[in-house]
Image (cartoon, rainbow, N blue to C red; front, side, top):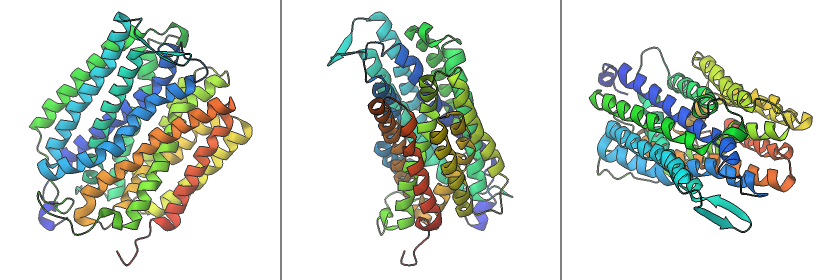
Amino acid sequence: MTQTEKQVSYIVPFITMVFLFFIVGFLTTANTQFQGPLKATFLEGVGDLKNTFTTLITFSWFLAYPICGRIGSAWTTRVGYKTTLIRSLFIMVLGLGCFSLSSWFTVHFPDANMHIGSNVVPYGFFIFLAGSFIAGASATILQVVINPYLTACYVKGTQSIQRMAIGGSANSIGTTLAPYFVAGIVFGGLSMEDVKVSQLMMPFCLLMVVIVLVVCVLYKLSMPDIKGTKAEAGEKLEKSVWSFSHLTLGVVSIFFYVGVEVCIGANINLYAIDQGMTDPALMATLYWGGMLVGRLIGSSLNTVSPRTQLTFTTILATVLALLAIVFNNPWLLTAVGLFHSIMWGAIFTLSVDKLGKYTSVASGVFMIGVVGGAVLPLLQGVLADALASWRWSWFIVVFGELFMLYYALAGSRIRQAE
């Protein structure tokens, strides 16, 4: 950033990005928390594949990331950061509308079902999956803007990984509140067997109104673009963004990071239910709450490098995941959230280091890796069905942590040839 740009105040845009990060975290986790209730309602006619069908909710959300990341980059180049944010929020409204529609359709057309072998699945469930994909597309485009903007905008007394940690803290507040929003507000604290599909309609209509109000406020705000973080409209980049090995391996690393983060955040409640434990929502809340605490701590670490932070946290997360398997105890997995907390910011910071005008495009490419949040939880659900237990499926998490450790130690190094 030039000296002239440092004289521009980015405080208001910074706060805006932090708030939008909260929305992304809140809605992402709220979406995953519908797995349990929808398993008990939409999927009551599904036989031995309930876990597989249930994890399709998370799969649909994260499938949007590899498909829509490049769209976010293209929009940022053509129309700038602010307009791209507004477009993505309107897409969010559409996705929330599909959630409400899925409830309305199922209530009014209870016999509209699809037969897949011996399994009976309401068409309303597939409308919910469509809404999950659309809302995930919005979250994708939002993050294509948020991540590079937080990294590059100048706020006095901070460095890029601190700003990412502050944004991540807001994200974690959203993820911490979301499980109780679903259990306490959407479903009124009811037990799984008493949940009604009709309860989905009103909360999502209210969220649509909230997002529209956010758009109205955002439209009035000043949000200057940051030069040097994206190509100018019509400018042709000299080489492929994939030629930067630290970015390419960063995309793979974020695939495993988001995959294992969502495996725990989305499936720990199913693991707890399988174990016959009470209050599974508490486990998810503790996990996401641990991420909040870790990010608050990370926002003060202005002298510890991203590489060191990533190395330390991946080692401890691996140990905890292994102990959870050995003792068959989901409570140990809740502590992993504390160490997952800074991984996103550390991996992103290392991945876009010294990319200059390739940064915006790299942010879109980076979103491809987020599909891990779709693939790994679904694979884990398939394994849980095949093994008739969630216990051994957590080796997926162990493998992901080990790859991130490799990235911290070697894969994130910038090669001189680049």
